[in-house]
Amino acid sequence: MSQIQPVNFRDIGGIPVANGTLQRQTFFRSGQIVNVEPQTVDFLEKSCNIKTIYDFRSAEELAKMPDTVIPSAAFKHLDILATASANQASLDEMMEGTGDAYQNMLLTYEQMITSSSAQAGYAQFLTDLVTTQEPLLFHCFAGKDRTGLAAALILKVAGASEQQIMTDYLKTNELRKEANQQIMDHFKDSMSEEDQRQLQIALTVAPEYLTRAKQTITDNYGDFDHYLQDGLHLGHDYVAEFRHLYVK
Image (cartoon, rainbow, N blue to C red; front, side, top):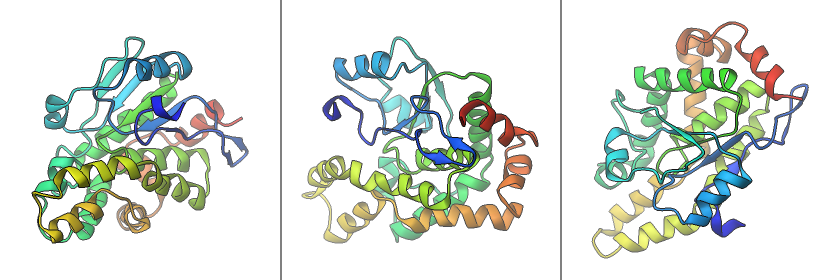
């Protein structure tokens, strides 16, 4: 089964949360769905019953490497970092990034909270979850940053603990190990040792990144509920509505 799944793929449901268990077979996350094999298309259609695919990549990423069509699924593009002043989430940005990749990633996570495109994109995504209650897949390039924050938002709304959220987030490093090594091998002869080190940092996630996003929410909105209401402009009853639908 693992061979036919997209890179960094998982169902984030099935975990115990506040007042129940988050519904399985509904919220799937992964890396990009590009040039995948027919058996992967079949897996997403028939085993996962995917009805909508959300692509959080930039317009440039999408133009260069469009998603493989999944016939059963509608496609929605939400460019999370379109207006961000910091972005080290795409492979091109990782390759072209200057300076400290770790610090650049921290700034990227701040932008995923404060930039207008991120707020609009995540607001649309979370709104769709309660208006179209069908299995969905959400992804970006690596499925680690823009996707990682989206998964964290879903889990937080569902009532997952901070440890549960971080565990899912860090699982990316395990699931992307082979893919990341292939990227490193591809570029090792054309990059300096220092550039390779920075790229390796950019290809992985660190607890501090998600913690920075959480701190940015606190600094700008006071708490998570006010972030949902004032940052994403979701209704006061959003959390209750989501849990009614998906926590059993």
